[in-house]
Image (tube, rainbow, N blue to C red; front, side):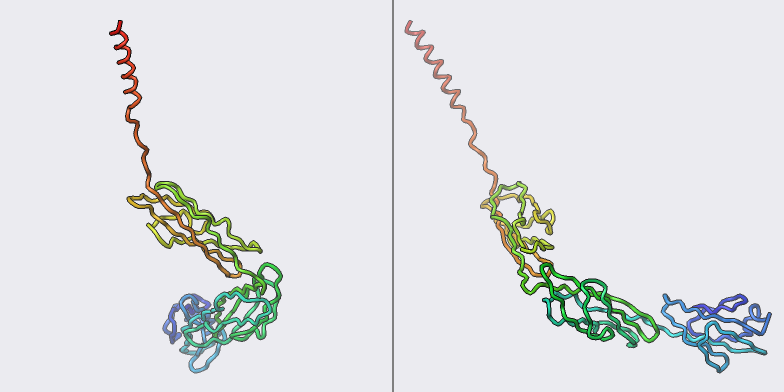
Length: 299
């Protein structure tokens, strides 16, 4: 907070009483003064009033005309800005009654003076009372894809400080059906193979699947290349002994928040080596050599 005379100098304090005669370098030139109180909002103070001797005024800047020593007080108040909370995002069905919720808004001084809601996106709807903590609206009719409505809440305290927050209301067709998750067919692979999971068969009639989430639910832990991808990959782990079975769950979600899950199993076998050549062909060649020797002997 700064209190600055027009003819130079500066006094800094959150709440102070300053005898004018205490600053002769600033005030001896004249008995008329112009003082401006400038609160530093980052420091958490608000200017309330000036007190000249015992007279009070909120005029700022303050013009003082004094024939002698005059006590001037700049009164500041510590303030806390409010915190707006427009509530959690909602997914609702068309034609349903929707209640917006600003009750989570707060102020450390407990002096929230007003609430104000305004729609910032989506098909225009009418709020029951834009100044209420919990206004209501009727969700509009939707044909096909969901309609997204956005509202901003502004809360203001008695000092005039304010904060804003937004909330999204997703309105779905009441005939909307959830998506169908398809994690692909079970696979049998060999240790060391790169394995690709396949969620591309997942389906929604409105083509509005917005997210895929793969989670391993059983087996030796492996690392997926991207758990939110349609086709993540991983390297099949080493097998010592019996084949390993890894299980994965795929969750798909549509625009309205409806979900579906499907499972897939990956069986991993150890590498097997083929029998090595025992050289039997060479032995047959040796037998042929023996036959030549017999022929020579008969001669």
